[in-house]
Amino acid sequence: MSYITDTLSNLLHQTAFFNLTVGNYAMILVACVFLYLAIKKGFEPLLLVPIAFGMLLVNIYPDIMIAPEDASNGVGGLLHYFYILDEWSILPSLIFMGVGAMTDFGPLIANPKSFLLGAAAQLGIYSAYFLAILLGFNGKAAAAISIIGGADGPTSIFLAGKLGQTALMGPIAVAAYSYMSLVPIIQPPIMKLFTTEKERKIKMDQLRPVSKLEKILFPIVITIVVCLILPTTAPLVGMLMLGNLFRESGVVKQLTETASNALMYIVVILLGTSVGASTSAEAFLNWDTLKIVGLGLIAFAVGTAGGVLFGKLMCKLSGGKINPLIGSAGVSAVPMAARVSQKVGAEADPTNFLLMHAMGPNVAGVIGTAVAAGTFMAIFGV
Image 1 (cartoon, rainbow, N blue to C red):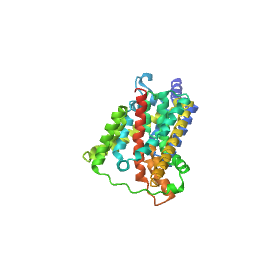
Image 2: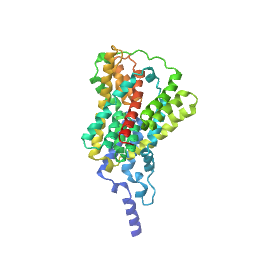
Image 3: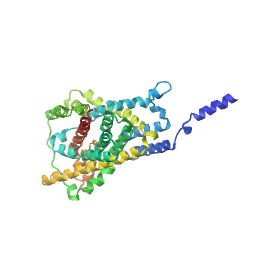
Image 4: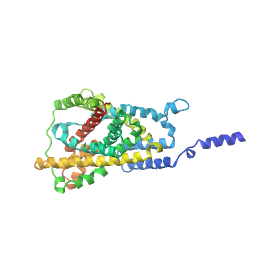
């Protein structure tokens, strides 16, 4: 009889109920909220569903992220091995290749001035960097946190890993991906605050046609120029441009389809669940996390405002030919930010079509955020 009671007692104490903390339950609730936003509201479900589910798993069963040296049998948890691919910057680089294979760089080539709008939107990154230092973070941590302002999750993970800020990678990645998902909510009020209705109604001239030769040369030239100036950007910019060259060359359709579909989605699953699994209650519920989330929001808002304000300047200099709304797309969340520019412009004038014009700054923002990450790595000698 004692054998039976001992066995039942052991089984009972192996359930999660006896091991979870209040913090774990709080994080489980947060995971459920993220799942609701992803499934019910449609906020970037490809990102939020795996992130939220990873968050759910690690707060129910923490050993799913245990390192081999901490495990009694010397075997690490499943998501620990996924997470190593984040720390090694493998998954973020593969994401960039997929983005390049899916994205048409034609609008940026047709309107090179878009580079300026993408650069202006990086204001949020540099402002958050100095603010993070004022809040007590060291230089490397401040740099890793500030990249959230680019609304670029892969770059945030990449830089945090390169700068050795793996302890902050979970909060940084979750903040970056959360703000990417919430672009349709965060950006419109800022865009409307800094523009007049007359400016939002501006219709832009149709973009010129871009030749196939231009599209093929663009990723090659950008790789050579950017990587010669900042070699540290090669993993991100190189993979982005490689994916785009697959797309535009027209001779490797199988590689284009794989990079933009099967491989991309596999990487998203691995990256999303491992990022979510880095948010255990012990690692996530602290003052540094709150600071990171707040700094990320400030950086994102300042970046959006910087793009819009520079768009206003370009509007003035062009005699009213540029709609300032497209400047908000420079924050790099492709293609969500460009869609938001289109949506806000259409609200002012339903016949206004800004999507392709906004894709120029959007792509420029991706490159600009990668350059910002490379600049920080160069500063810290990584």
